[in-house]
Length: 270
Image (tube, one colour):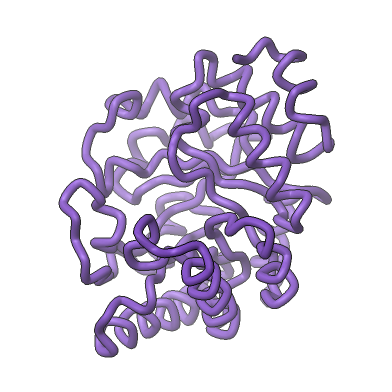
């Protein structure tokens, strides 16, 4: 790992766990409720350690990242059909959007590449793996850390054991390809096995909006208890009654180990 990568990773974790807010949903799903105008949304996320963006939105919210102590900018490098859930795509085919050097020019401190495997096509699987390898090679040239997002094809339809197996294998594959972090789903009781067999830090993603805000805090607490080095939450932050209060509660749970119910009471959450 280069000095630049080490410095940027050190700032992201700052000696503890990381809380990342994802606001890149429009890249796949269009203007979802709550994500229509990203400027005011991102401006409310100053307490996050990083904010995950699509490349086209980075210049539109640049002012949020222009001051000392601002969140790190995390930029997604590829686009995959597996995320466009509204169209029921099945191939989980990915294409590159921008190279890491262009992300760095936008102001990125960290980049992210998504990967799906077991798509049903050996050719598509190989293409998706090759894309991760290419992104890793590019990020090394510019000194940016890279997150490998492991997102199983059709994950919502998979039985829990199969979903866990695919994620476990996928996490090891992206680590073997050279990513510095992994972002993926918490798989339940066996998630600690994934953490132990993945030789880079794992961040748990939040997925769907939970019925209650305390439910999202409990998901975060469980992930950290099971070995995750932090979380990447989107809808559960943006869709909260008060995103700022929820983000403060999430920081208490993820970084300081506060009980989710206590954090919810402290910050007046539902």
